[in-house]
Amino acid sequence: MMVYHRLYWSLWLFSCFRQNFGQELQFPEPANGAVGESVVLAPVNPPSTSFLITQWFFNSTFIIAVVSGVTSVNSSYEGRVRFDINTLALELQNLTLNDSGIYRLETSTVGAALMKGETSLQVFEKISSVRLIDPEELLIEDDSSASITSEGTGSITSVEWMKDNSPLSPSNRIIFSPDNRSVSISPVQRSDSGEYQCTYRNPVSSETAKLSLIINYGPENVSIEGPEVVDLGKRVSLFCFANSVPSASFIWRFNGTDTGVTTDTFTIDETDFTHSGDYECTASNSVTKRSASHRHALLVKGEGGGLTTGAIVGIVIGVLVAVAGICGLIFYLIKTKKIPSLNLHKNGRTSGAAAQSRQEPELNYADISHFQKAGGERVILGNNSEPSTEYAEVKSGAKSKAPPPPYGSQVSNHPLRR
Ligand SMILES: *[C@@H]1O[C@H](CO)[C@@H](O)[C@H](O)[C@H]1NC(C)=O
Ligand SMILES: *[C@@H]1O[C@H](CO)[C@@H](O)[C@H](O)[C@H]1NC(C)=O
Ligand SMILES: *[C@@H]1O[C@H](CO)[C@@H](O)[C@H](O)[C@H]1NC(C)=O
Ligand SMILES: *[C@@H]1O[C@H](CO)[C@@H](O)[C@H](O)[C@H]1NC(C)=O
Ligand SMILES: *[C@@H]1O[C@H](CO)[C@@H](O)[C@H](O)[C@H]1NC(C)=O
Ligand SMILES: *[C@@H]1O[C@H](CO)[C@@H](O)[C@H](O)[C@H]1NC(C)=O
Ligand SMILES: *[C@@H]1O[C@H](CO)[C@@H](O)[C@H](O)[C@H]1NC(C)=O
Image (cartoon, rainbow, N blue to C red; front, top):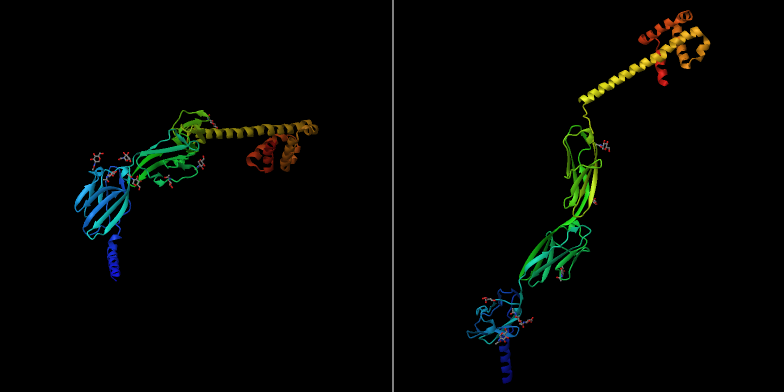
């Protein structure tokens, strides 16, 4: 009975104290610290009662103890630890990498309850001197490979790459080294041009280095912009465009001959007809050693209004030539038609039918037409003597007055058909 009583008493005591005895001292998430800096390790739930004894340990070695208000510090921590008796917080200064580990706190209250808790501290060397090492050689699209290497000091827990402020992801051309500290791009393309950022990170610091990469390419899509037809005496410019990095240099040729113009613009201040022809722009890239050309035909034409003296003179000459030609033609016709026909009549009269049959058929026809036409009116007279003089008169009259249209048309048609 007595035994049971004591047992129950003990159990009661135990359960009563168990609340405190089993209570853990809680810490926020594991602490991080930087070499040379300080860190505070403090429980979030310090007991409210007064403490009898409090101790801090690192791994298993003693750091500091406060017993009934008396503080003792491990000599190796002298001068770089602080302890707050109210919050039980431990401040460690001048952290070194060797301070990383498990920190345990134990405290006993007046009621003899023991409270324990532990946390961990990870000390990092701050990151510094991060830089990116430029690929040495010039990068040419589709030909070159680029390797960007980073370096820096400190405890590096992660390496992140960005390009133009977006994360750089690996691909079949973009490959990261196993530790992510360097990236190689092979082969480079123009889309790889841009600003690369590399960030070294650890929980207590980070540093970013930047590098601009230029991928050289081109020239391509060379084109010439400008008119194809330009008026005489005008100013005209042709512009040559090329897709090229670095910017292309230009050479202009005219009809295959170098013009000496090496700018992107070819300007003619005042066009004349010798400027018509074939203009060729060749764009060259000094880095890629590539070049490409484009051709453009330019035609200089006289002004459309015909007001220039040259045009007027030309027209006048043309008209004169035409008039002279018509006059000459008429004269020729008169010479070849009229006179022979007159002669024929004379011959016919004088030499007879034999002479007539030897004559060309045309002349005969003409003769017949004459004869019929004139004969229609003057057959009786024609059969008589002296018809020739009268024919001549009839002809001239027919031309001016044109009473017999078939006669005039035949006269003009025959020589043309010939
Ligand atoms: C003091 O700390 C050192 C390590 O810094 C340890 O080796 C030593 O045992 C500690 N002293 C005591 C009395 O615990
Ligand atoms: C930290 O260590 C340096 C020497 O390494 C010393 O000069 C400095 O006083 C120390 N700081 C603290 C707070 O102990
Ligand atoms: C860390 O500890 C090692 C031995 O454990 C010692 O050689 C070294 O000097 C210590 N480093 C610092 C910064 O205290
Ligand atoms: C303390 O413990 C941690 C892990 O428990 C270990 O990594 C570290 O080296 C220890 N530090 C010392 C000084 O013993
Ligand atoms: C390298 O970075 C990728 C993300 O870009 C990450 O998934 C990977 O774990 C990193 N590797 C190392 C060794 O840091
Ligand atoms: C420019 O040239 C490239 C190849 O040289 C071609 O793929 C592209 O279509 C061209 N772009 C234009 C706008 O002509
Ligand atoms: C240039 O070539 C065009 C035809 O390709 C030709 O008509 C023109 O007369 C030429 N001009 C010169 C100045 O050679």
